[in-house]
Image: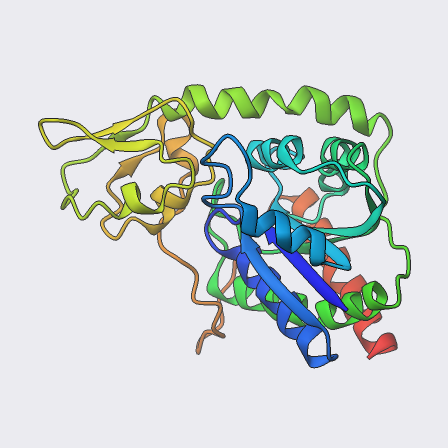
Length: 296
């Protein structure tokens, strides 16, 4: 079976999950191709190579990080550009977020509706907790636990996908309406992006310019960095800045700087969450551990 996995990743969490999917498919004897959304949408139409990959694929996977309980704006833009198929093609969706709230399960409503109209039939959807790149920084211990759990879950999920077993995520009441309201984040991100600023410690390495998925960061004639109106608030520039030199507008207090190592720390670390998050994390890991124990 040929599987095409198309994904968007802000700071690398969803990419790690996508790569684990690809390697697991390969271990089962299937051919898996990974395609990042970065660069796919630069032209008026999708690249011919990508269109050929879609045509040749038996199964297509779409992955993304949850943005305000929705798929990122870039994924909806991709959905609009996908070719309309002459016959239906099976697809699956996976997403990542920093917390296991059920509200995250509504993130695919708009995206799956859009691609369904192009005859991509989503029969399975999965969600994985990965560490925050905005709001607050998870401890190294929690990041390690999240990634270890995802690595144990993905083989179980891939097995279901290969067997074409339907899998849905439980949604909340009025989910479509809530998702519609929360999509204000898409234009809000663009507006907030114009408020990004560079701090004095910037060394002009231009890393942020080179890694921005929407080419939103430009170098002005006087050599300073200028932020445009196409920000996704993926937080890639802010988290991966080697000097923590980017102010993220109105949400600067939520900024997380520095990539996670995903390695187990040598000393115990404690992080306190509010009651709702504590209950949600405990339930998530308990359910995951139970499934891993029963299905491995």
